[in-house]
Image (cartoon, rainbow, N blue to C red; front, side, top):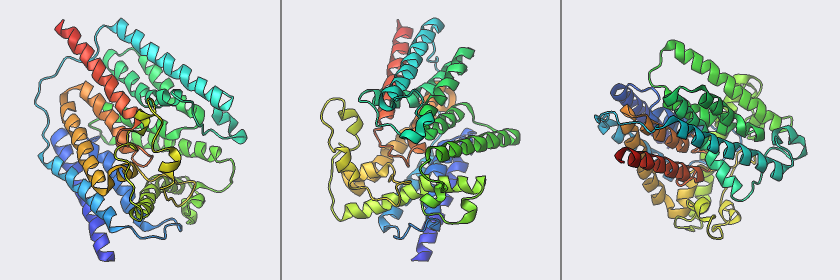
Length: 410
C-alpha cells in the first residue's frame, strides 16, 4: 500500500511538472496557472504525507487519491492541447481617463470607508490589530458590510494596478498600495499576500535570474512579516504556530525558514488533511445540500441562510483550532458528493485555462485570469466554487466590458 501511495504521489508531481513545462514552452509564461496549482494544491497534498504533525493519526481515504489524480490528470490533458490565442489585440477596457479616475476613486472611497467603519462598529476601534489583547483582530463582521468588504478586498488592489498599468498615472499605484494593506488593520495576512501574488501574475511572465532573486527576497520578507503579525495576533500563547498544530520538530519552530515551513504546512497541508477527516465523517452520514453550501454567500442576501453556519461547520472535522479548515472541496462534497468535486474541478479548470488562453495578447483577459487565480491561492481557506468575492468580481468585470463595448459601437 505504501508503494502504491508513493507511486500515485510521484505521478501527480510528474504531471504537474510536465504541465508547467508545456505551458512555459507554448506561452513563454513562468506565471502560468500550473505554478499556482502546484504550490497551493498539489505540493501541500504530497507534503501532508510526511506527517509533520503528530495530530495526523488517520490515513488518507483512497477516494482522496482519486480526486487529486483525476484533477491533476485533467490539467495535464488541458496543457497538452491548449494553444495560444491567435486573435488580434482587442481595444482595451480603459476609455476616457477622467471618467475612469472618478469611478476608481469612488470605489476606493467606498471600500476604505466601509472597511474601517466595520472595524469600528464590530470591534470598537479603527485598527483591531492594535487591540489584540482585548479581543483579537478576528471580527464577526456586519451584515452586508461584510460581503461588500470581502468583494472589494479581493477586487480593488488588482483593479487599481490594472488602471495604473494602462494609464501610468501614479495615483492608481498609490491606491494599489493603500488597498493592499487596508486588510492589515485586522491582521488579514492572506488577503495581502494574495493581492501581491495576483498582481505579480498579471504583470510578470518572463523572468531572469536577477528578477527571480529580487522576487524571492521580497516574498521572503513579506512572508516573514506575515508570520510576525500572526504571532502577534496569537497573544494568548507563547508557543510557536508549529507547536499549536502538532509540529514538534525543533527546526520547524525555532528559525525563520523552519517557521515558514510550519505555517505553509499548517495552512495548506493540514487543511487537505482536514478534508480527509471531514470526508470520512460525511461518508458515515451522507447529507446533500444540493448547491446551497456553494451559493450560501449569494442566497444570504435574499433568504434565511441554509445551511446555517452551525449546520455547515458541525460536519467539519479538524486536527486543531489553529488549523480548522477543510479546503474548497468540502463545499462541493456537502453539496453534491464526491462526483460534485470532480465536476466542479472540470468546470473551474476549463474556465481558468480558457481565460488564460485569451490572456496571451489581451490585458483585460489577463486581469480576469489573475482574479480567477484567487480561487487557487485560497483553495485551502473555504474558498467555495461560487465564493462571494469571485462571482461579484466576474459580474463587475463583465458589466465594465459590456459598457465599454457598447460605447465603442455607439
